[in-house]
Image (cartoon, rainbow, N blue to C red; front, top):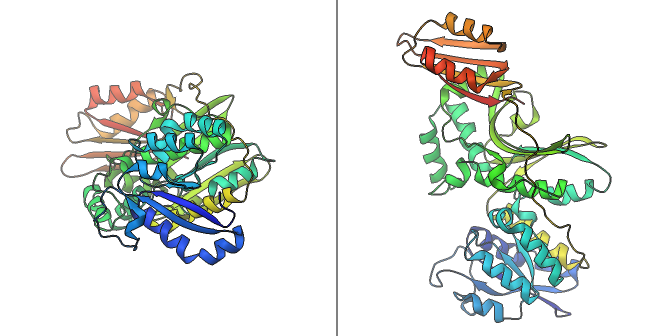
Length: 416
């Protein structure tokens, strides 16, 4: 690494890559003063060299061939191209060459992080990934500070701005899911293919990374609970609200009794809960420590500049630190079986061809041992039954019996 210049390579000059370029240029003097060296982007890998970009970049810096980046004299490579292939192969090759890596790629880390951390340690290079979780919220750095004195019991939060925007608009404007999703795509909050966001994958990748940092291990992705928002509808959101709750896509990593739990699920939060107040495309992370108690961090979770800010902070941080090996990432299998019945849940029951009466339904649940805390019943002129209830002891067997005996479809959501 030159004594006067830090040479940076970019993999990807899309939204985030363009933001990284803008940030380095606009903060050039501050970075130079802080680091004692000038930071320069000297090579940028793109898919299409002719594409018009929102941020100007010199032609001699652009290449469509990864081999040119690998052969250049870059000190640090910022990976913001996303995806797993061919990104994984590129990052491996750069680490083996001895390049430090800064990445915002949560999918890559969740699927190959255990290997990449070991590889970086073996080659004596830094693998920095603050921007991979919650964009502009510096949650990973904060957690590293807390881990020096606190045992963290759980980390939970709203880790996907797209789904939070959709749920906010559905509740406030009473618009159906498909209509709000289209709005989100037009505004640039949602991709043309929104599956990673709305099916909960994006939030799960981030939760996996948080668990690795906090607990030194995580569950394999296939072993975590994952449920997205694509099947939520206004009936569920409305009844939850009448019962005093708001539905959020809640990500959670916790460790109790020796067992690690990882989940991303639509969850009911009391209206006065801090996370229930997080609206639109904002993210929030709540940390529970044995000494510090509960802390909440909130900010913009995505977008050009919030993510670019985290990338450039990572870049500056690793340039001021001596190399120390990272704790090795590990995966463990889930401990024990989940309980047959939800401890406390929101049960949403719906039937368009009810066999029986609402009273018979509630009587059946009472006799079956389901303890109902409170409920709202809607039974309109078209004989459509909707019941929302906060209950405990509701199990899969009850769901099957309701469908068989009453023609009722039941869905269950956790309650925080």
